[in-house]
Length: 597
Ligand code: OXD
Ligand code: MN
Image 1: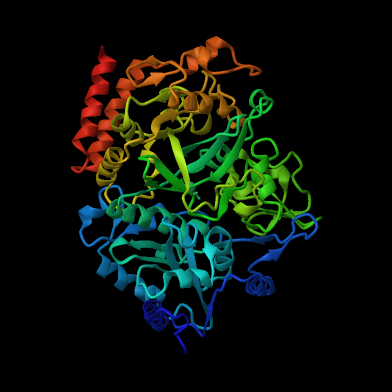
Image 2: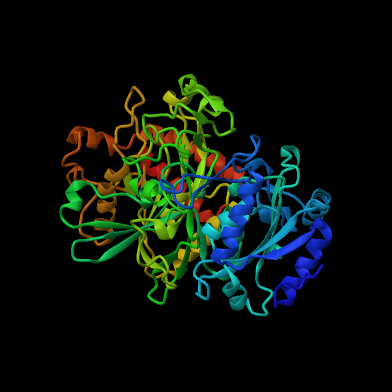
């Protein structure tokens, strides 16, 4: 078999080695052309791997179902394989690289027999830009090829840009037996390598996304002096045409895509404000010559959660997903060959197959057992092209990226965190990011206050020790002379009955406007123990069903609750281990001190 499929000897040598391991019957180089993509779509439809949907209602859209045991990222089977365990840190799973290569080689051995190896050359960020990093993914799945064509920039121009360099990320994916007992998502940051086996689910197999653009990239960012973060990027344009950019980190499934594509409420729209989406999940940030942080979204599409997406919650995402989209694990409406998911509308299809491909009876839906009774899997997805997004920023393809005015962290806290607060400075802001957390509510689980610490929303995505990651944040604040201001928001504060108080969605812009006003020193604030909190009259609640008293409540800081939280923070820092920077312990001590006064 001819393994010289590119002009780059390092790429060819690596492919040859992998071919010897997985033993495909054929090799196909993905060239990024529409003709090749169309031929692959046809092939996937002929084997049942994908289903072509109604061309009139959903042009160029397809449905795919993963195996029932393979519907989400698997954090417990995700490993960072550094030669020293301590470099992966206590929060990551670690395996010795040699042991891991040996163990996984057995699983890969012959796994492509009778199958084609697809070679996908892809770029994260605009090809040829200062931000760009290149990868090659080898896969046995057409579904992966077609998703990568949407999510990343794929094509022969990537190989041209790579030239004869060995600087590319080597990704090997094999579906193998989709055996969950032998599923591994392994990262070898010292070797620029990712190995993924026994899965066909997006987050585990679209290796450009979490594996490369977060885990490997965060490792490279520390080495090279930049940052890879789990952040959306949003532009807010004022009536005079000036656009300011915010990047925001929220844990998975906490509304990043909704915020990234928000539609301004009438009070701002009528004045001429507009919003622009640069990214919904990942930001790469570099210090510009002006000392500001400049950000790009390294991806080229959206891998969004379908359930809950509708004309009210996120009309832009819905419009984006109405063409050229691959739907995964949603409900199939057989009457008109379209798709449906919980929360799309109030008309579940009567003649439909659920996400498992079984005949679905919508009357049996039970909120307490969504996985078994819903039409769409709760983690069902749409893979949609950024270019189809109605509010896509005209800077999306700008190789320089966009300058960030504010970084916003956000968790899901029923009581502790106020609607918004501003950190005192970069070091304190890093502390605020390090203590990010989400908790279950009484309404959801019956148990209030089960807190999962998710620093910077990066707990599952930092490719090295968490303490070192925080140290890198502190260092970046010193390098960036005009670093963004850092804020924290909480859209999820609840009343005594467990109902959300703040309306959320587009109305979150009211909070973002305060944040931008703070960045420009246009508005005051009240200094509290945890940071600067808005004066209630500075958040515009015109037209909302919220009284000033409720807003005061939303902005309140309960010192007793915060003191309790400090104990949890301390426990978490101990768990992270001895690389937690002393500056963060100083911040914790200072916080306790302020709270006790
Ligand atoms: C996630 C995602 O799991 O973006 O965070 O898919
Ligand atoms: Mn994400």
